Length: 208
Image (cartoon, rainbow, N blue to C red; front, side):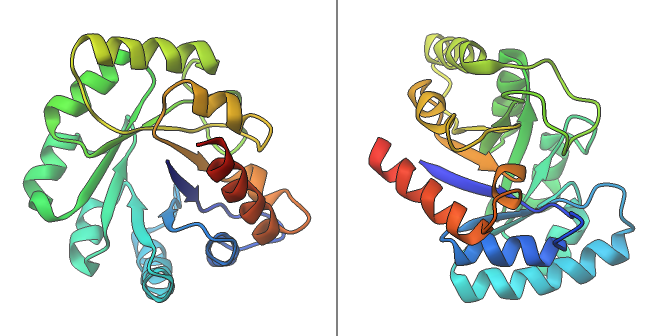
């Protein structure tokens, strides 16, 4: 069960701070998400975070910027619904990079699977303030239904649940059959984000 952390900028923490605390807490998968920021700013932050992730032995993914991923040799890219299509990114990056795609329906999952994605960020689980133009809420039933249809169609692709998930949701979300959970706000809103991450990791290990 993989645990992903999506960076977020808040009044209290920078993107770099948020990644530092997640890594300190034991998370080993960081996605840099800087929507609407100029590419030059994203690159500057990406280079800092890439060094940090290497120090921790963590996977480093950049949201949206395929060319930047190739340029700095990040581990991979995550593509939202309005970003470059997965198939096009795969042609640019080849087989050595991880490519994730955002999905809200089984049809989205099937499309990304056929295009060569390595994993799916599936959501939102519930309403979240960290994302604009939210897709329809999935809830537990949504994940269960998508995974059931994947099994019927013999589609094997890791599904990572995302969108407003809190520590109290994790046991029930894991029961749906997803392969991972992506978090942001619930960690950063805690009194001690690093300690919250430790608690989440411990909970996920105990739920296996």
